Structures are given as structure tokens and as C-alpha cells.
Amino acid sequence: LFIIGGYPQIFKKKTFQIPRLMTINLHGGPLPSYRGGSPLNWQIINMKNSIGISIIKVDKGIDTGPILAEAKFPFRKSDDIATIHKKANKIFVKLLKKILTNLFKGKIKLKPQTNTNKKYWYQRSDQDGILNLNINSAKKAIYFVKALTSPYPGAWVNLKNKIKLRIFELEIHKKNFLKKKGQIEIIKNKIFLRTKDKTCRVLRYKYER
Image 1 (cartoon, helix red, strand yellow):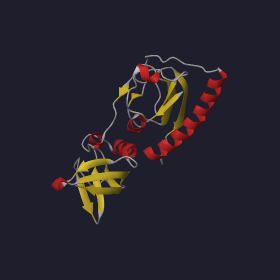
Image 2 (tube, helix red, strand yellow):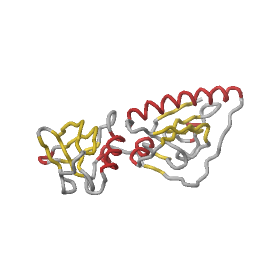
Image 3 (cartoon, one colour):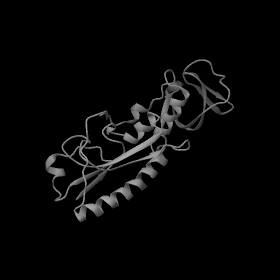
Image 4 (cartoon, one colour):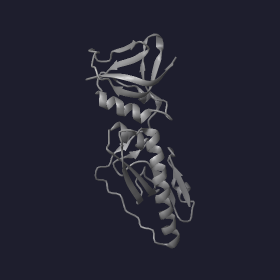
């Protein structure tokens, strides 16, 4: 038996067929709507109220194999990608234990995927982390930051003199005093930025050249 999780490469058929039983993939997204890379991050970016995960038998397609188990859990206001990873990993362990028990008892059930609502998401990189203040609402920006905060490199914006501002936590400010979209101001050592609709304050950040 092979078990993989968070593995971004595609196995060739001769590889995933090495084990006598099967190759199992722990996939951080509901299927078939979140096939592809970075599914947990994408679900947060898309402001999903619940997070889905799946365990599948690997076949020659990209996340197209039959489903062995799946689960959903709520995305709380206090959550970010770090807490979602922890929650998902705990559920993965519970699901995997049940799968392995049934597998070795010969009682495994496979649920074929349909192509209804299928969608592929690309593997994200740091280049995708730029926060576009001109088109994102404050709420969208906050979810974007939550999806890319530690242990990931963080969302970022470019400042003057080739300085990059890495953003790890963001909140909507009670006063919408910045009027120009994309405006960034440092006031009394506090960083504020203007999204498409509201002023936000950067709570956790670092500068990078």
C-alpha cells in the first residue's frame, strides 16, 4: 500500500500500481470541484464557509480516482490556513484509520467520481501572492491573507524603493479614512491600506527587499 499526502507530482501508472492493494491520496479539497494543486488555500481564497477534504484511490488522471472517504468542516472567523491544516490533518487520520481497517477486512467501498462541477486549480506559488488592492474588497483581501499566512510566505504588496510588504494578518479599520484604491499609508508606525471599498489595518507583517 502507498499513501501520499500533499504531494504535487503526478505518478506514472507503473509507479502507483507497484503496491498490491492500491495507492491512496489524501487530497485537501472536495472532489471533483477542487482537483489540482493548493486546494485548501483555494477554498479559503474563494471564501468558502466550509472546507472539504477527500481520500481517493490514485488512477492515471489528476485527482480523478474513486473516492474512499470525504468530509467537510466549518471555516470559522478565527481560522486561517494554519488552523485549517491542523483540523484537516486530524480528520485525515480518523478517515484513514477507518479506510485501512475496512481495506484489510476486504470491505472497502469505492465511490466513482462524476464530471459534474469538475474544476482544476493550479498549484500556487509566491508569485500568486500579490494582493491587488484595486479589485479586491476588504473582505476578499482578508480571506486572501488568511489563505497565505504562515506557514506560507504571506500575501504581499510592493512599496517604494523595491521594498515588499509581506502581510500575515489584516483587519477592516473602523474608519474608512483612506479614499484612494490601492493607497498605503504608515501612520504612527501603523500600516493602513485601501482596498476597493474599505480601509484596512495590517496587524502582522514584515518588510522584504
